[in-house]
Image (cartoon, rainbow, N blue to C red; front, top):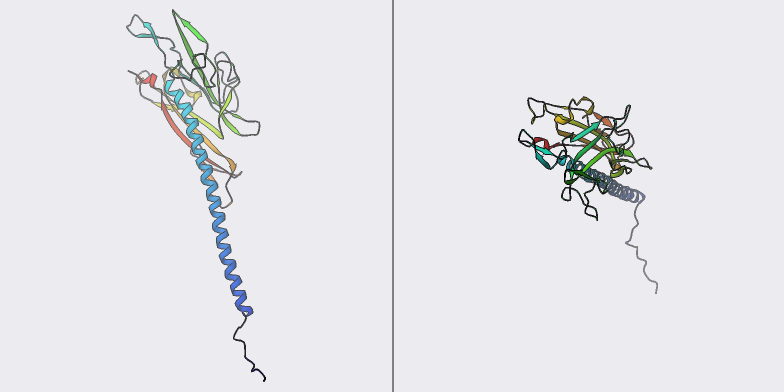
Length: 281
């Protein structure tokens, strides 16, 4: 017996339906890719700024810690005017707008002439509580080197001459360095410190405990009257993380608008430190 022919109820997709489906799929995939790439770029920027924040905090903390001790000295006696005679009474800080000729000289530093970044020397009496002592129990400088003993009368004192400045590594990375009067070669402390600017808060005889002006090192009239230091560090990301669609502008240490042409992110950080050993009554 001949079987009756049945028409299939299954129908295929038309070409138009197939093309519409493909377009919708491509739109969804494109949106996912854009979101993924955007999230990745945002993540890279967040990591870069977090790294700059951390580096700036470390660099500022190191310098501020020394500045808070600048000029510290123990009393060694009493003068005829009933005031203390101290182990160190010279300038607590000294700076140069264009850097030092030799940051690790064993004598007084000399300012360089020409172009260069600012540098600052911080001086104070060191002991086992305000520095990290060596294994021999001797106070140390900013590099951990033991300081030489200086006899005054029947007592022995140690004096730290820490010198902070910028230098470039062998791979072209800007770094904050420190050297001391010990003569050892300066060593990097923090990476990616691209620029340093320092202003000195100077008092006068009429107002010895009040800042009357902030000036650059070249315009300081008396280092003994400097009672405050304002510092700016321009930090740079360790890698180029900016794209053409990202904000490429930033403010430098003079609050002037600049453009990052090399795709490195940058941010300026400011702090002001009072030299408390110059402010005591």
